[in-house]
Every structure is written in structure tokens, then in C-alpha cells.
Image (cartoon, rainbow, N blue to C red):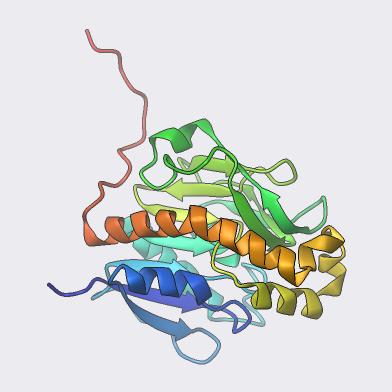
Length: 251
């Protein structure tokens, strides 16, 4: 049986696949990584069974400095229209939102940074990827922009007190996560060193190496099974979310 192939869009070298890549490869998924600053994005999604879009330090609409952002949005929009399983993280989630009719802005409450909790929304209980998550899973936050308005018909799956649109699904199988699940302690420490102003918004202990190592063990316990479910979605072994719309009473 041929391994399913995922297109991985990487906007920044500072946010690699890291643990996410390890988890997907352990599930038998083939990964085609495209560093968008260095390689042109594919013209289409032919030959791919899913899409990953990672994070980066740029904004979702910074096309003047990063013209390839338009290609990322085009491919994410195409993935949604083709019902391809898609996982978009941080900047990726913002690109997915904009590509499908949502809005992104600079977060009015300042950066959201550190090891924090998000809370599942009611719709998560019926979602094939989110249903089995703990009610308040730990995540790694490091962003200054927010998804201000979700795309029309998007399902809201998780929130935080500071910025409510933390996770959402567009269509049957395209997921946006404002937070990070792919990091290692070393990646997080590198971000803090490069952006000390944002890092200062977190608790000082959040950048202690031992604390980060323990936090990442907790992340793995929760998010590796989540990624395994995403791989099942890619392989066609897990049914995507049902059609949205009003449920009529049976008579």
C-alpha cells in the first residue's frame, strides 16, 4: 500500500516540523517539505493527500515582503475546497482563516506567550480530532496576531481567555491551531532569544529548560494521539466531520 503524501508548507526556518514530523512519520505518512522562502510552492495539490502549514514570524498578509504568502493562502483554500485533511499551525492557522473568509489582526491585548491552557468548545465534542482531547489541554503559545473573525461556517473548537479563536475547523477536515504542538524546548528558547519583547509577556519560569522539558512531555502525551488521529484522517481510516447545518427534529 502506497504511503499517503502530505505537502508541508514551511514559512520560516525558525519553526520546523520538529516533533510533528516525527509523529507523522511514525504513522507511515510521507512528508514533502517546501521551505517557502527558498522554493516555489506547488501549482496544485495533485498527488497529495493532505496539507500541513507551519508558523513564522511574519503576518498573514505581509505579501509585500513575502509574496509567497499568497501561494500558501491559495493552496490552503484549494485544500478546503477539495476536502483534503489540513493542519495549519499559528501563522498557518491565520493564513487558513484569511484564505477562507476570516480576518486576522494584531492582538489588542498584546502577545500571548508561554505554556498555557486552552479550553475546548462545545463543538469539539463532536469533532473526530478534538473529541478525545482533555477539556483543557496544555499548549505552547507564541504569537502577537490573532484570528479576529472566524471564516463563515467555521466550527469553533477551542478558546483561551486572552484570544478566543484558538482552534477551528473549516469544512470537513481543515484545522487551524493558533497555538503550537510541534515544538521542542530548544525551538522555544530560540524564539524567546530572537523576540525578547514578546517573551517578556510570559512567566519567567516558562523559559526554564527543565520546565520546558516537562511541559513538552505533557504536550506529547496529549498531542501525539491527536496527530495520530489526523494521520488516520489522511489515510481514510477516520471519517471527517459531518456536514454543518441545522439539525431538524425527527418526526
